[in-house]
Length: 216
Image 1: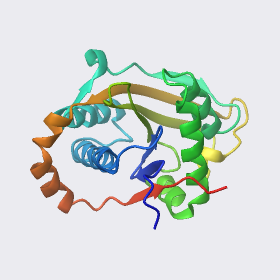
Image 2 (image 1 turned 180 degrees about the horizontal axis):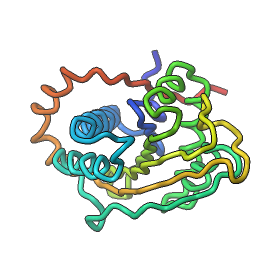
Image 3 (image 1 turned 30 degrees about the horizontal axis):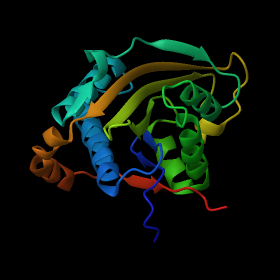
Image 4 (image 1 turned 30 degrees about the vertical axis):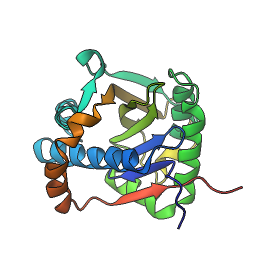
């Protein structure tokens, strides 16, 4: 068993990628917060029918656990026509973000996911083959603060495809609808919630698939 922190994780319909190597504590906290926020939102809203309200509840739960929302807002919905795979789109979008390492981190995570059949199958099932899924790149800033960008995504396509992330969509056959939220963790606030989180996680049945870089 490798002691190296995974490059990412699949939990429910969430694909989390990590820039650099997070500490094991931060990786577990990031994963636990994602799982708890997803569960809380699922209990309140149907993510497929009421995506805006679902995302609001998801972010509120993260804020309760110690995450602050950048500028206090979730971005409005944007639409992008796909030419090629969703994976390629995610990599290109990551390369435009503030930290230039985002693109390489996304490549590492997607490569690990593509090679992990159980994780890829779980993401297909939980997202209804891309009908609703989330991608969450995470990183440290220069002060060691942990940041997470949450991209809530809907794949609108003529047909449903297994392995939807890697399918070579043809122009005009698929559109990606996206909302975004950017958050930063207050570890001191999270520490006050650990007992509550532990109690909630005991009832958590969501599968977690750690994704690791393939060795050359």
